[in-house]
Image (cartoon, rainbow, N blue to C red; front, top):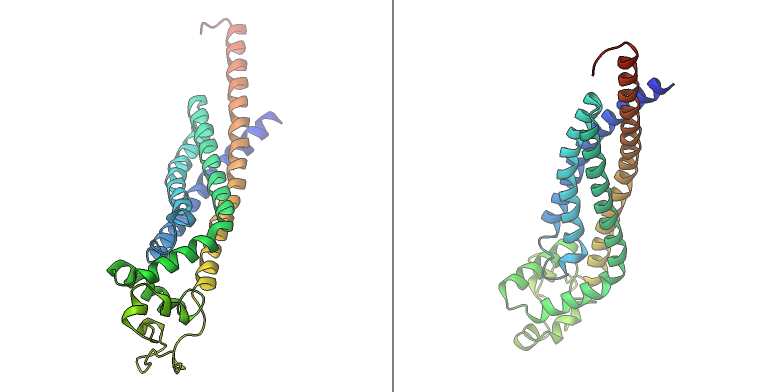
Length: 251
């Protein structure tokens, strides 16, 4: 029974190590995707909304690859020292993923306020290159105009004074649009950007939290397997010494 438990734990630990390699690749992909996708939003919303949890996920992915390798070695060697290192590292990663999940969950309530403030600020500073590029990207990508609607451009500190009753061309669905609000050009996007950007950020936080929870379950399995092998390695060594002494052998 004890031997079967040990073999099962070894197989389980090797599987966990292999899963960790796949998980590491998946986490790094998700983190990289978040960075590439949201690089156009860093001036519109605080990085803590998505980039901080994403950074934690990428870091965890790198550690998971290393830990997966250590786990496979620990299962094959049954070294008490390597098993202890594996247990400690996997516990550290588990806590990091819990932190990422909790961070994403807590920040979800602040998304609307932060995005709204960021959008208003970007529209008011539209004359600056970075702000202009990012606002244009968001409006074209999400097919929206202004914060709540196109009329937000009329109160812009820069745009509202320089352009009367006209919105930027990024608010237009094609090149034939005049951008006029009086009378309103039908080619100007009708929906504001705030609800669309908010949904985009909330979706991202859900993805991060889901990955963290899914891999936390795998890590718990690894922790249990490591504990069993640690206990069994101690028992096996104890029995081997007793056997040697009974046979009159020096150890």
